[in-house]
Structure formats: structure tokens, C-alpha cells
Image (tube, rainbow, N blue to C red; front, side, top):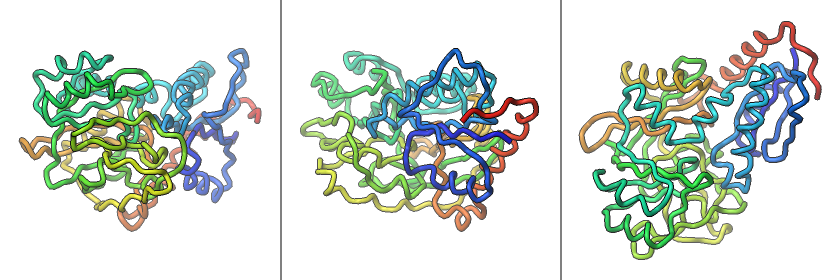
Length: 361
């Protein structure tokens, strides 16, 4: 079998994946999306399989170019006929909250009401018929970074007029109703190959914001350039935006803003561990989550939903193609999801192997 290419950007998140591949003596090639090149005229098929693990939070680590570049190279792999795990279509969906909402709407799934805007001057009118509080979050999301919560239309209007909102790398944002989760918890449903892998309940801490990554590696602050800070003087959310002074700290699982006083990187402490429990969601909700992943073309991914304190209904609010599996998964869910992921990769690679040309590495 020819090598498996791993297209990725974060230097730490995939050590477990690499270790499992090495344990099984599987040949793989790390493909660093932040420093990569390809020749469109080169029409060889160099890998048995490519696994896309580029994160939409790349811009927090001064790798914003990885996000847009990944679309180009994934299109190249698609044109060559190379099988890709979470390929072009999945990644396009991963990097657009607006497209995710359109997919949920098309499938008739419940989600917090939202509007899509591309200029702060449109926020007040867009949010006029929404129920406050609301969240403004970038279309290309990751880590909860740049998200801001506003309790009243007046607060939103002040921020929009003050020029303190950053809509992210594509200058597009969602303004969405904030729904407090009943019991202070949300549910993450992990799906692999169109089937439920496991589900967990994550308990949120308002003091810690909404970085809900279940892996320990996401909870430790890292160094690196931070995105533009968002500060609204006089509001409870004043201070550093998520990632300000802690770029790379967070994962891609979040529903709100991480807001706390600004601090120098050296003074920022590691986040407290999340309380996480294994959980079995209602079968109907699992079916909806699986349908969402399948319709989005994701081979592996996580769907997050909450049960709203306001009305007791369940609402999907995030779809993540990049999954950092829960820490100590064997103890929590009874098996190693990384091992099962590698099982899946080997099956995909083997299925593509007949007739393929030698790898060029």
C-alpha cells in the first residue's frame, strides 16, 4: 500500500494519530498546509489516501493562509481522483458557518435563529427580530475566537458603531440567538463513516467561556500571534477576545465568546479541565446528527447540540470536520477512537490501492 498523506497545520493535535500509524507500521507522509506547494500540471497520484486535518482556527497560529490554501490543494487532489478523507466539499462546509446553516435548513433541523451579514452596519437591522442575547461570530469559525455576546440591541449597536468587531478572514459573520443550555451542558456527537462513534456531554463554565474542546491538548495555552482583539468598553464582555494573547489555545468546538481581562502570554494560565461524561442521546437526535454529517459529505466529524433552557427544545449549532477525540477515551467511552479512525483509514486506503501508481515522495 502506498503512503497515506496527512494534510494538517497544528503541530500538536495529531501526535496520537501519527503514533497509532507508526505503531502499526503504516507508511504516511506529513503534509504541512502552512508551508506546501503543488504543480497543477503534475498528474501523478502520489498517495493511496489523503487525510485532511486542516483546522479553521489556523489563523490563530499565524497560519491563516492554510485555510484558503487547503481548498486549492484539496481541489487538486479531487481532480486527480485521489481519495480524500474530509475532502473539498466537506472542508468548504467546515469553513463556513453560513453554509452549515443552509444545510441544517435544507434538512429541516432545528438551530438557533441567525442572520448572515458582511458589514457591521448591517448588524442592528439583521438582529431586529431576533431574541436577545445574541452572539456575533465569524463565518470562518474556530476556537470561539472573535465571538462576542450582546445582551441588548443597544450593546450591539454600540459595538457595531465603534468599529471593534472583527468578522474574520472572509469578512462575513453570523448574528445568532444565544440559547443558554439546560443543565449547563451541551452534547457532542462524533460520527465516523456515516455511523455514530460515540457521544459525550460537556458541562460548560461561564467563567471559562465556550472553548468546549474535549481533548486536553486544546486546553493548554500556546504562544504565537493573536487575532485582532475585540474590546467593548463598559460591557461584561470587555477584555481579550478568545485567542488574544493565547493563540492556538483553543479547539474548534464552541458556541460563544471567551472573554477575560487582557494578559501577557506568559501570565495566561491553562484552562481548567472540562467536566465530561459519556452520554447516550435520544435515538432521534442521533439520527439527525448522522444525517447532517452524511449530507455534508464528512467522513469524520462532530455535531454539537444543546437543549435550550428557554423552551426545552434541542438545537444544533455547530458542525466540525476536525475532531480531537476526547481525552482518556478508553476510560470514558470504552474504546480508543483514534484506533478506530486508523482502522477506517486503512480500509479506505486498501480499497483505493488496486491499480494505483507508485507514490512519489
